Amino acid sequence: MSKVKYYYDPDTLSYRKIEAKKSRRYRNISLFLLGSLLFGLLGLTILLNTSFINTPKELSLEREVRNYELQFELLNRKMVQIEEVLGNIEDRDNNIYRLYFEANPIPDEQRKAGFGGVNRYKSLEGFNNSDMIIATKKRMDIIQKQMVIQSKSLDEITTLAAEKEKLLAAIPAIQPINNEDLTRMASGYGWRSDPFTKARKMHFGMDFTAPKGTPIYATGDGTVTRADSNSAGYGNHIRIDHGFGYVSLYAHLSKYNVTAGRRVKRGDLIGFVGSTGRSEAPHLHYEIFKGDERINPINFYYGSLTAEEFENMLKTASQENQSLD
Image 1 (cartoon, helix red, strand yellow):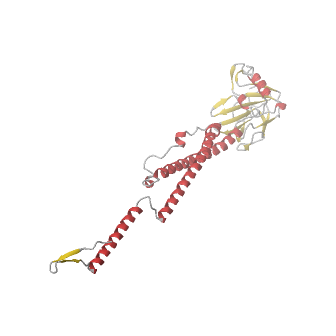
Image 2 (spheres, rainbow, N blue to C red; image 1 turned 90 degrees about the vertical axis):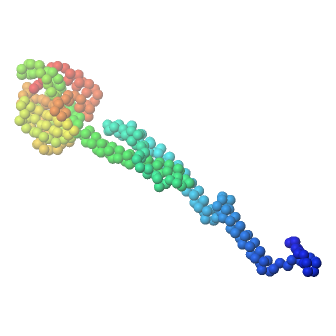
């Protein structure tokens, strides 16, 4: 309750009560209400800018942020699984596939390298969860790069596999005369006695003794480049280009079953045993070239001989006897 105020009236020599004017009263009330309103607005503004009170929009945004954080966490778990699977594929790629096809392994530094130079993640900086977002983005970029490298590697392996299949089919890998048709393996690769001069000279092929007319077979896939008698000493002979630098030669034939330019498969009948050219008796003289070098055919019979047959042939071929041409 407000206090009653008085003033001294000298005319009446008495105290009179001070009566408040209505206008002042209204003014005071108005000032009070205005001050209360301003104070309330100020207090509300302060509270709204603190963590004590959140607006419905802020609450909705907080829920959305928490949902995004949960999604990022789930995404990171998925990336861990992807990294494990990708790591397993990379390990097999380096230690099985590339090793088998004689390709150099891809180093981890290349597979898992980051991205240097310009800051690729500058636009993601400055937010409350920037560190988490940037780390996740970097991780995704590295995984994507790994997948691209692995995809290219598998493409390379596919190409190498196709080439390997062609190579395995092309390499001269069987005996040119069947064992049941073979009289004996007369002479091997190495220094031998010449049947005509009796001088010791290098014999660059293998001589297979067989009756005249015995079938001769292509030892690998390839193209017949020659089927003629225009090479000194060989008589009627055939040359097959197998690709990959390999060429096989079949000499002293009685007749041909192919012509130059024909494509043949391993095991195709190409001619018949004879004794044409510089030959002492019916036999097949067989050579293999790798590039410009003549190499020992004994190393190319893995496709037709058993271990015992190969051992016997190796023993016979190593004997320094007289050749038949």
